[in-house]
Image (cartoon, rainbow, N blue to C red; front, side, top):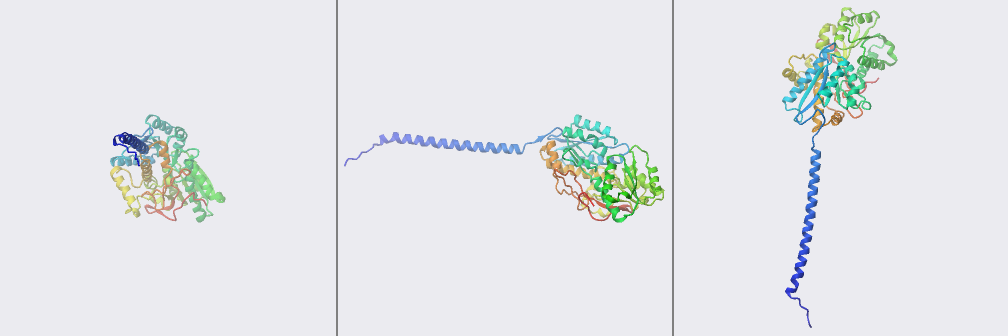
Length: 433
């Protein structure tokens, strides 16, 4: 049987061709694999680069963050000047510690003498000349009201307004404005509820500052009293430009009121408390939270004259021995001793400034490397149960995209001896009856 045999020389060309095809296919496969790998690495690199990208708006850089501030260092509300002084000291401390996420805080603070017109001038200077990233802790209802539309139109954050007016909690119409202090209306409702429970047949006299601050307090009082609003005998306004309110106090006493509600700023609150004592008038007295300072209100009025006065608080009293071993108070006292030894521990405005600065530092920390105005507002509106050592136990900072009121809790207190003494429970929400 014949067999067909292929010589080695005849097979070689065919094997060589097959090998070449196989080799080409292998190379092609490797090239495709390499291309896929390179694409994957590139995509991963791009994603990493995007996630780690530093984003800045005007007023922020690798080196610093500019914050603009307006406080009445002079004028009729100069007692509030310590708010700005403490915040300047706080950011000095932060900068000495390396800043926030490696950036120093450039805190630029101007005086407006509690004048809305001056506040507008200073706000424009800070935004257009100093080019700050945000306005921070501008003090006063009237001053903030004067600049609110301008800042929102410019999309410049107006953060942690030092005022308890309800207008700061309006994210729909003013998405670039967030308040800080508890609502004046809510605070007044606390006093109304107490009066309804403890003095339901009382006769009320009200002294109030004739601006948004006083009118907010007054509305809260009416809302809280409800069908008992007829208890109010007189609502006496005063102008911030007045030298004194003493004649108003005499008028209130003459009407036979046995409850005196003092909705005024420190200078006038002190005058009123002192005049009540001079007239030997002995009503149940209330004073607004903005005027609880031992240094700027109680001592000028006379400690003996302030006995029994009622107010409401959300922070610890730095002069109360009860907090001597409290970590939050120890940190506060150490801060003042090192950076602001001239500031009185009895000045409640100093504590206000400190608390707001703590909150701002937390927000900036959370911003990371995305220091755009939009992200700053996003972080400021996303504080969940943020605790600060200087707030009263149970009181926390909370904000959301639909609720721009950071602090909505208060506790009643009464001035006794040389200190404010807390009583009752911490009240939350809008304190409605």
